[in-house]
Length: 137
Image 1 (cartoon, one colour):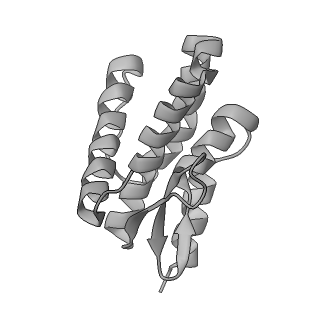
Image 2 (cartoon, one colour):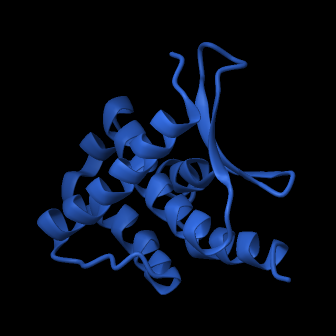
Image 3 (spheres, one colour):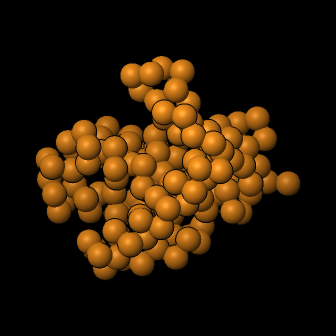
């Protein structure tokens, strides 16, 4: 899959918007694109598990949930600090998207995956806060 930086930026912005809509429709939770709202992402990821049980852990659902909320958190970071989205297809069997800024990459979808699939104690908010702290002037 090859896309321009602009196309990828548009896709991620759309995905972030879809996270807001899906969260409102499914759980009545309002994500307002503020840094503070990232704490709600931690809660909402677990709400998907509560509501849909094992269905939330099927491959397609995991991909969708993690990419929507990864885009949402990444867009907050991008608008606040900067950066651009990068599609990494170096492993064709497992391509992924990261946000690049100041020589670092941030795998926001990856941290959502860790919370959803591996360890509910992992915090998207803590990862986000650390990413901000890494780039504080």
